[in-house]
Amino acid sequence: VIDPFAVSEPWRQFVQGAQRAGQRLHVTVASADDGPLKDRMSAIVDRLDDGLAETWKIARRGDQIDDAVRRLDPTSLRSKQASLEERLATTPSDDVESALTSVRGQIDSTERLKAESTRTADRLRLTQTRLDELVTRAAEVAIGAGDTDAYEHDVDDLVIELEALRQAVEETNRP
Image (tube, rainbow, N blue to C red; front, side, top):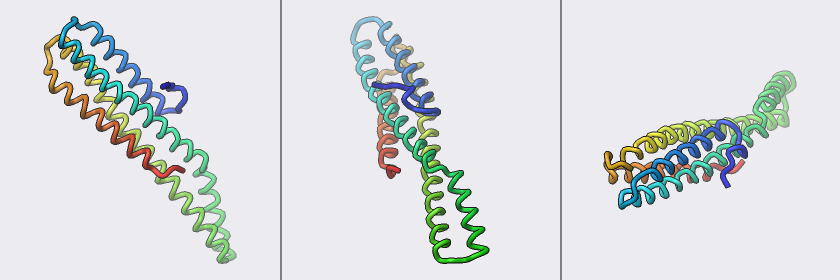
């Protein structure tokens, strides 16, 4: 079950946007005249629904990454780093130097996770824009004023892009 309120921002708005686009698309196709074109559009909509499911999976993973960053608490880690650097400057020791190396590694991990979250959100934002465009074009195609083959190809491209993005974020080392 897709529940946009199960994830935090900005992931929630991506899920809600995809849901709204999906609803508009279903209404557009349902209002088309019965016949082969409507049947083909219905099949295309089913494929796009797969893309909406991918958006949900991506949003959940992005939210998990953001949650991991919050739990790691970069602000606290930077405070520890400053304290250890000060301590190392006044009373150098191998233990303090090892602790500082460990804290720096933790900070590096949080920075990588934050960068992954940002990249994922940026790509999802772009796919959302493309999804909105496809929903708008569906009205043309559904009345026979647009190229159905090109539309189907563009839908497939978007769904493949979403599937690839989902696979990429799932491969992110789980924090």
